[in-house]
Length: 115
Length: 109
Image (cartoon, each protein chain N blue to C red):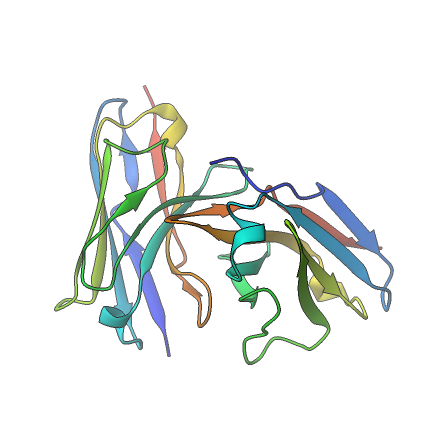
């Protein structure tokens, strides 16, 4: 059974940092592009970032570029999202996902940025 | 990157069909075959329903079908059932990035 399990969410003040993790099992993690997608309360899905199977060529949405860093450890089957300089508008449930064919999503982790 | 445009809502009675559109540009929907559709029930993670415009993953009922013409992709749900009531999102590859649609709430009357 494929599982993607996110962790690391929580409450943080504006300007603060958080590191999200996504532990994968049941898939050949090192073979796939992996993504972070977020959903603000009551809002739609928004793509945040992706990374190549070998950990190269990260790509970011304009809204997070320069503040967020995606990375992965294929030996640990884990995807990461380092989030710095957090803003109120970053408040959302963050999902890790394999998009497209054979797609899988985690259950998400809530990040709340408040002052 | 602007969100793909979907109608906010769609509805139909049980057994009827509903079609949801997803309009982008030649830089996303119109330029690639990598359009997918996701179903999301309240409080749940999204679920893949269609990938690469018209392909159904195993386990997804054949009542769900996808197509594309130009810069607009479509999802059709035939023979609506109560459990189809959910939010639906399209998603397209856009060169190096990805972009989601604005979402459509489907109501089964």
